[in-house]
Length: 401
Ligand code: ASP
Ligand code: MG
Image 1 (spheres, protein in one colour):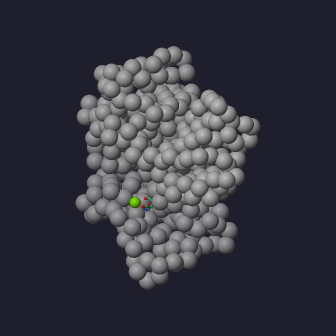
Image 2: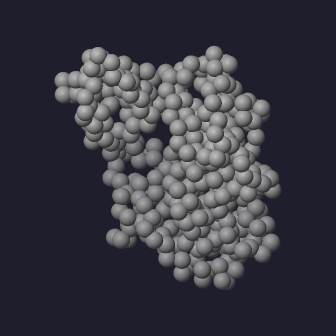
Image 3: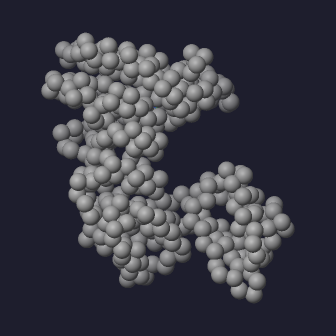
């Protein structure tokens, strides 16, 4: 059995936490598994390094930023190797480069291109616990790169895929994926299993447990991924995998996303090419559009409403206003006090009626739905932000109550 474990910064914050994690690692090792561990930087180290850089240079080169930020992870692996040796087990630390992780050259946001597993395998054969610095790689010029914030998750999945690991365990400070944010719904339950696609939806909808890129990669290489807490390592977490053993769960979770804004173009001409013009203008600015709603034409005019991520709102407003003549609309309305609330579930495909049940729950609570969008595995509605907590609760109650 080969296990890849990943520990995030909060699990490594100080020597006491490090010692605790060393114990979790050596326990796994003593049970006979081959263990590769991918570590983040301790606590807020990465933020602190970034702040130091900006004190000296408000626009540091990205190459030097990588040279600096990657140090946090290098510290973690060396210290952890020492903690494990102190606990009586053999360990070796490897930087991203030593672990054979090659990336492209987009500094501070590099992509892994390949992993040469030879060194890691050699160390595993010697029954060493292999500690790999997360977040780091090396480009073809032999310069250190980093994978973007939260990138250790991606390192871990990539290493697990390259080694053909049986399991990738992602230790964080939450003990799994829940049916809703427990801060909004205290009765939310931990899921034993969830599919990659559901996890991707829940992550992009604001249930921030795993970096999307890491889940996409786990799906592509079919790496079973477990989310669990380093504070309670013996409590089973949530397993993310391709197919669920428990079939027929209609809805796995309810997510809320506050990071959204709605724009409405009022009284556009009702003729071919208008939508194309609007959305190609936005696409050219790399503005991602989410839900789109077009009214039916009346008196030769129609309205189009759509949502964008909150941080794209200003740019979207500018582009549309600049092109008002060319597009031909009479008014641009904006709402940024809205939220997207979604029910996600791989079982929806085979279970008609999920949307109806969700809308009934909202209607009974007197919550107005502004827009709706659906996919094979989710139903999303746009509601006033002040209604969004309640929306999550009543939808959760309808499916899990
Ligand atoms: N240390 C980096 C960060 O804080 C990478 C990681 O933790 O995954 O973003
Ligand atoms: Mg961190």
